[in-house]
Amino acid sequence: MSVSDSPAHPTEEAVLEALGTIRDPDLGNDIVTLGFVKDVKIEGRKVAFTIELTTPACPVKEQFREQAHDAVMALDGVEEVEVSLTADTARQLVEQKNPIPGVRYSIAVASGKGGVGKSTVAANLALALAKDGAEVGLMDADIYGPSMPIMFGVKDRPQVTADNMIIPIEKYGIKIMSIGFIADERMPVIWRGPLVGKMVQEFLGSVEWGELDYLIVDLPPGTGDAQLT
Image (tube, rainbow, N blue to C red; front, side, top):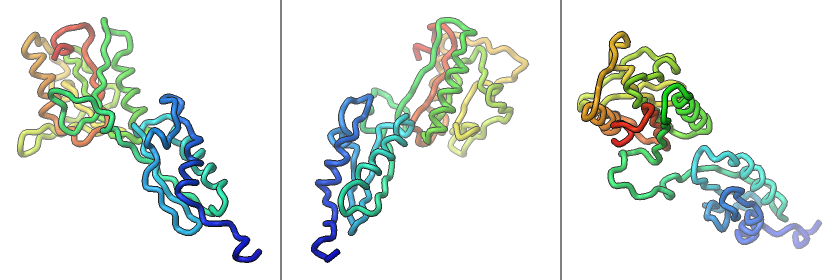
């Protein structure tokens, strides 16, 4: 084959056109129109680009990677494709009056009564998000029956920094804070009204959560002071 007969180098336009065939099943549009494709770089016959997802826990991220790789690899002149995946959860944030510093999303898990598996759902949700690569915190706000210490097998007490910030316990890649880490497990917690609200505010504002994609909050059953706070 002569030089003139060899396949031309791929263009950015051709790459974007190929990636435009990949659709997000939830958002109902292609990943180019949705603005997911970033930093397209073409060096000779190598094409590299980034797919920026809305969450690191996207259930179809590996499907996107495979489809994007195959679509671009099928273009004339392409011999190598490098696909990077990132997540920008911040761009879908809704303005909050008093956001928790460093926390992008807060998910409260509640129930009208106890014993229905609320804490199990909260724990498994945190584990699933962490497994998918998200930075996750788990706040056990069920002051009447904190179960996260038992579920995660944690008996340690959290440390406190020089500026009186509580350092959450880390287990399985999750930052966990529970009243069960502080209170004597042999003594019942009998709190009402302002004390409950103050405890929730302390856990939200005085715990050094760091940068989190998700903070899962396990609320006590019912619709009392903790939920209103």
